[in-house]
Length: 407
Image (cartoon, rainbow, N blue to C red; front, top):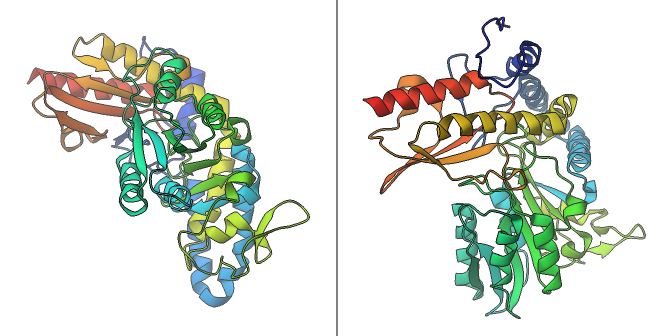
């Protein structure tokens, strides 16, 4: 570990604190010459997570037919760890490759009648918009949009945007818990209550939440909640989940039918758990045939890694780095923040509109990975600040931006 003898005078930290976070950074697999500020797309695995995945992959390949069976219980153990991490019963969780699959399982797993309405926001992820478009085309569903302001001042602004669009045909509300474009944290718990008061179900797209902010799914009260494990939780790529409440499960159908299906249908046991073939219903609808077990088993190791640090400490670190970034960019005069500043509405994603740039190829010249896009009057940029980052990464990003703009 490099000694931190020359801390930048503007860093809101201490040598002891930075030495701790440097020890965490050293466990990530990001190349030493890279500045990786894109956990919002893909998280980098810490070494213990990657090593656990490799260990299982190698063991399975030594005897594929025999060794696969023994890892089913390891995957179930990882599911239990995930359930404790997000406060949801393990039997109510289906593993999925990603949140897009999870949301599709919820939307297309429900029965629809022509004219039924899905109320979504105007800031949903593009792949989810495609999911909704297919529901319109195949099921005759009407998709309506709540117009959330780019910079809402308070949670009520979001709730009011949804409240204005409800009708007696609204059957499902769909909203990102943390939006991908601006990092806005929406008031999902209050929105779930609003949906239920209007007689609708709610599905939350929690792509960015697990590993960025502490989650309590039972407290949120959603009927369905999809999440990714390969972003902020830094689990292997292709790991996510769908949570469904017991009442929500009663209304779900299989999207893909494999060995998790029963011709006799699902039955609720004496313990109150809906089951298929003596396994929890959610474990049945996730069965899409042969899949990799190692990546899902390693989710448990990813959770152990973060629990050793602490959920609140992770949340605070990401926000501290984000606040430093936002303050530094605000001082430039050419960066407009697109992420709300209110603590209840923002976390570790910071989005900006940048003016005065001809080119924003930060990777080719500076080895900085951060998503950008050209717009009519400038560029959009989204920065993810996670526990694999430091204040020096923010400084190098801003120095690179200033150099590019001055050319």
